[in-house]
Amino acid sequence: MIQDAATLPVVETFHSLQGEGHHSGRSAFFIRLAGCNVGCPWCDTKHSWPKAAHPQRHLDDLAQEAAAAERQGAAFTVITGGEPLHHNLDALASALRESSSNALHLETSGIDPLSGSPDWITLSPKPHRPPRQELLSQCDELKVVIHGQTDLDFAQAMAAAVRPSTQLLLQPGWGSDQGQQLAVEHAQRNPRWRLSLQTHKWIGVR
Image (cartoon, rainbow, N blue to C red; front, side, top):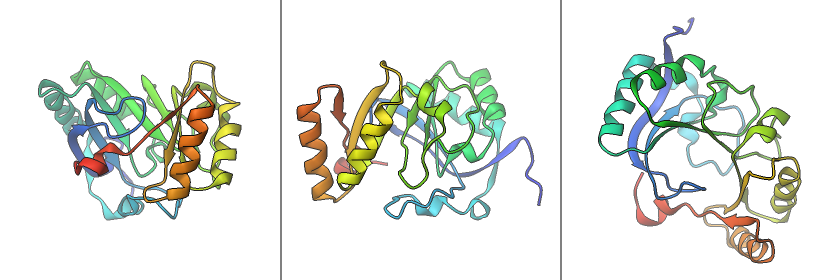
């Protein structure tokens, strides 16, 4: 089946608060696209992996939802997944910008070519599928999930490849005591790094 160029497979859309990273706590509208072959074993959205399991949504409908969320207080729109860059995001970004003045944020692992010209790129790279150099050189925020020392070593290697202005965040894996300890201690010793917590899970919101 050929995918309509005016549609994308969508897991869900919702208006909530950004729960993690540099913009944590801010009102945001989320578009979660389906499809991911990165395969992180600890992923908390594995239901988003199979693209065919989710409906195709027209881009104009998504844009209208984003505009409605802006009127209700959303400060920006987040395209997430899955892995959103498995899809070319140019048409979606264009539709969103036509209907809303909000900034467009992208959350990605960085393994695919960049599209959509986002205003803010959150790069969350994975050691088993390292990101493309173009994503490292353009990301605004580097957010690395930490479960053990090898993740911390990977985070430092990734930080050496980003711009000086890129925000550096360590996010303990959910339920990982070792990850929490390593992230806290590293942030204490290295002032350029910040701790990122999944606050939406702690307070029970989407």
